[in-house]
Length: 79
Image (cartoon, rainbow, N blue to C red; front, side, top):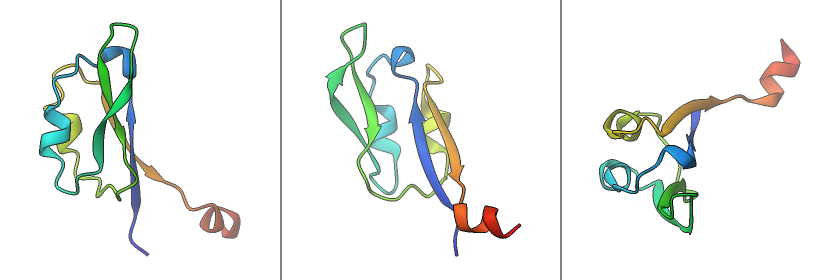
């Protein structure tokens, strides 16, 4: 089974530049309707699968995006 990835957005770091939305090859990120404390619409996952490529995290000038591998609970129980 291929690895699964998710993005985590540190909302208060985001300045709303939308670079992450434009660079995602799987279109897995959209701008939220919600705003952070600065009044900026921040990115969030939209349900499309993340490939874990890291392009969104690399292009983010505020380091507001982290990518992590989703652990499989069944594999953890077997080990």
